[in-house]
Structures are given as structure tokens and as C-alpha cells.
Length: 139
Image (cartoon, rainbow, N blue to C red; front, side, top):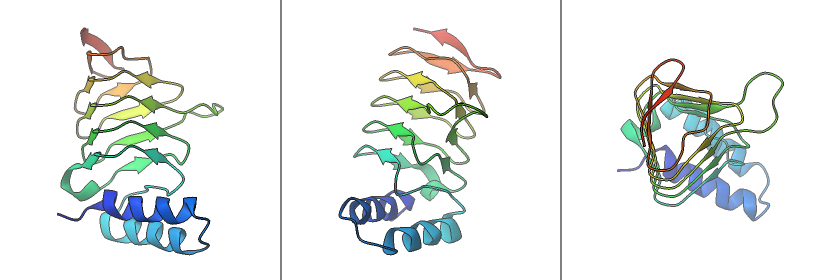
């Protein structure tokens, strides 16, 4: 099924090839169809999946997302006021519906972020984080 990720990949490829205007048009198309902000400047690894087509997903343009990440609907990956370092998400991570990853945060490989969790701290590899603010449930 075609979702926002495929359109992102196309716009990112064109951005890297320095094609003017078209990546921005594709980004606007993603916003109109999926109500998502997935900028072509973001670095999202291969194999990433947006649940439900990527509806309501907001990703900061400087965010770094690893390979094979599952991103639920209404997920926010962004910064906090006054911070210029943004989240880095490892490989094989599951971001459940409504989770928020904010600020200078590193999410380790094979981590699980629970539904509606607000992550403001680093999450180590092979861990689960849940709650508001998120706490490490298990390692």
C-alpha cells in the first residue's frame, strides 16, 4: 500500500539530486493527503513504515530516524524550545500511536515507545518506555 513514506523517499531523493521546487510540492501533497508534516530534509532509514499511511505524523526536518522503524499515527518527533539538537532514533524501533519524542533524545536500537508516551530522556537499546513523562519500563 502506498503511504507517506513512499512520497517522502521520492522527495528526499529529488532533494539530494538538487532538483528545485518538486520536493516541496511533494511535501505539500503529503500534508494535504495524510495531514502529516514529513519534510524532505529529514533522514529516514529504509524499511521504515508509517502506520495507517502516516496520518498525523510530524517529523522535524533535522530528525534522524534509523532503518526498519514503525511509526504509528499522530507521532511527533521534534525539538523543544531553545534546543537545536533533535532526536536520533535507532534501528528496529517501534513508536506507538501518539508518542512524542522531544528534544535532544537518543532512542536505542530495538526499543519500544508506548502509546501516548512523552519521551524527554534517552532510551537505551532493547528497552521499553511508557508514560508521561516516559520512564524506562524494562531493559
